[in-house]
Length: 456
Image 1 (cartoon, rainbow, N blue to C red):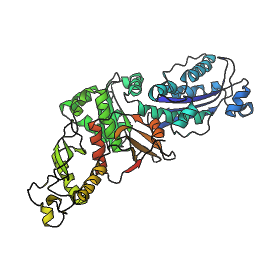
Image 2 (tube, helix red, strand yellow):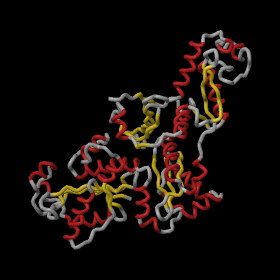
Image 3 (cartoon, one colour):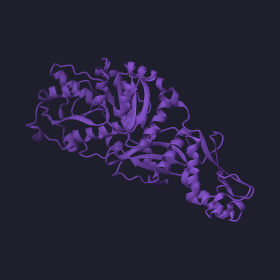
Image 4 (cartoon, helix red, strand yellow):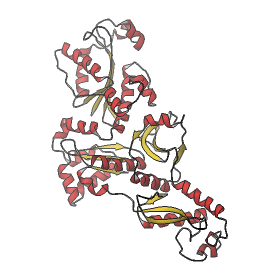
């Protein structure tokens, strides 16, 4: 659990500042579960430059509560939380100073979004909150007021959690959160899980992730882990201390995240899933008469496939539909081995490429159309799918035919070119598995929106 906060102060000499406004959002890694926002009477003068910056003046604070009147609420809402702030050292110091004036030692673990952003989103021109969120397309209102800045920090932190592919923030949080150190009941863990699409992470007591999975219903899937009686499930049941999750909205995002994180985190109970997820591929070649032939074969890493399949039957089913949709020749697709005409020519559903009755230029255009539709080779595009919320969409970036990564964007923020999109994207590895996942998802979801992108 995190307490994401922002504090406005009077300005002035070091350790003599007072708080004029505080906003705290209690955040469980997915949504805000509690909040506290209040003006505070600092009982001291506000520096003129601060009044100009925040718009908060002494008149507004005359009837505001003094710090000792809000201190109990601050302690309660931050209990068992990691403090998160943009330049956390400053906010944490100011809070500590105010509590020491009351004779109370305020101690919490803390995370700084400036430091995290420098590590996870390198090469930004500025890491000030205003410029950083603007460059990342994060909407912000009431800039330089505690509530507006704290909400912007919540959205920034959410993006940083997405970009933390090693899950170091989450694992640290599980390790530090005292409630997870107790022997949990499986029902207690289940209570905090949603019935949404996403990726889930099963942790043991030291925070280490021991299993990664994806599901269209996380709660239902975890229940299966906790009730199954096979050897692996029993081991997971005996070691599980916490389950964290990432809602993705999109099944494609969940599939890609699961594949990447099993490879990078190497959880001990995911060994069977590290193998390649496809067995067959579709290849093309030109015969001696210049016709483009298609052929299903075992996947071979040394050759470049048009697209890949989980098994031979799904490859054959795809090719049979392609023959029908693109009026292709059964002989030149390997579906009807023959030395003469294919069966479809006999029933007038093939134009005669099998006996050179159709010009190879005409036939090849249809084959090339099929290849272009099912391969993103050399393309610059973004695949747009569901997001985690109504006003959000997910984006999968393909640059020069290479999968670059994925991210989420607000519907009010237009994606118009690769340079803008790259700052929102969590970089991910391109490999044969990711190509298979994307291509097979595109085949199954023909209405999925894709946008061609252009460099500035």
